[in-house]
Length: 274
Image (cartoon, rainbow, N blue to C red):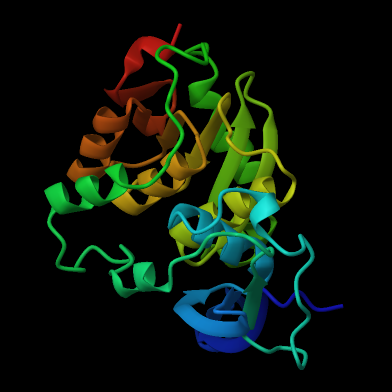
């Protein structure tokens, strides 16, 4: 059976023809199903470009990051509503009966790009109005020796990247450095939504003793999603943005960048590292 995340192309190379495997990128529409004034209502929330697979996880992870879902109890079912036809790029998320939801909250801009036009101060103030988990100071305690090992463990589990070389990854690790969950996607923020969504569906949020490791850099959006999931430690192989550092310092998160070889930089709250 072919992997829906991979598409094969015939390409020219060095004067000859050969097969090349590329990561699939397709749009996904996220729709929310809820009751309003006694009537069942369905509303489109977002369209994101993603790699197919684990779409339900992506959607619920996205909704957790935006403060719409508190946990799996906010969902009518932890099982996805099947699409009307195979390959349908729409996922529908039904809220549980009695789950509070204000449709007007969707009128604000989702922070999905670096050019959204929202200043850093306003971005942080918007997060302060959300009911996110509080980070315990100095907890969990993590050995510094674990951090340099995370990129290799993440890379070894990237099955699609090994075929295409074109996907980002996000992994949830425990405080001993054991990989708990990994997801791949063309968008690093989508990969984070997928791992957070999986943990939400399994009833494991908040992830108070976990480490989030991402390929590439860390942006404000990735730190926002980690904070909403209760993840106290975020590490990456590349640099964080300035606003990501601001967010980490504001909410007491440990932010680590440039994890390469035996070295790394700690940009916020190094007190969790032994």
